[in-house]
Length: 222
Image (cartoon, rainbow, N blue to C red):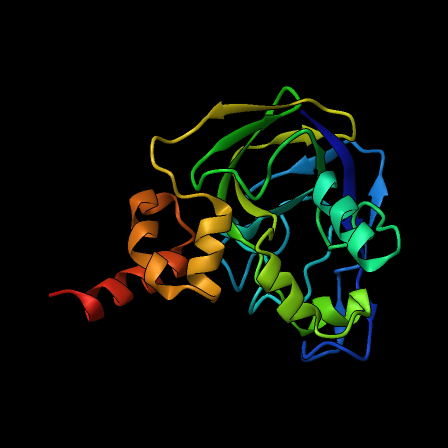
């Protein structure tokens, strides 16, 4: 398992985002590194966990619980075959393009060591949006991405440090529960009844997903 590509985005004006200033950092391109990875601060204030990486819409992106976004190269290749065109590393706006790691199959709270210093913790899947659809240029992309259910993973920074393309990735902690990124994504999008199961991941969940699950259970208990 390794970090195949490390991707950074710069702010760019586009016609397909509802970000107030009309800019996005979703167009991420590979860099050699090293790049410093740190916890950026609370959502709404903190942006990306990677130095030099742009997160422009702080209402929905960035912050400690969405500090880093990872996508498996294998999932990009699968989508490329379905779409009939190759997808470059970074095409989904991901910071980390991995190889040999089942990103969407990772458990919430699972921890990865990237390189010799950085430890990241899985928090949730990526919810597709209008900007993502516009960036890919694919009709009905939000629906198609949701139906496939392989959203990649957002991660929080547990131990900061430097990373670069080619670094090994090691799973250093895997929780006992069975709540994967893919399951949590389905619970948040198309199968709300799964929210009861999601609570098994506890405080490792993204706080917004944890709140959603707790409210669902409270409404449907008894």
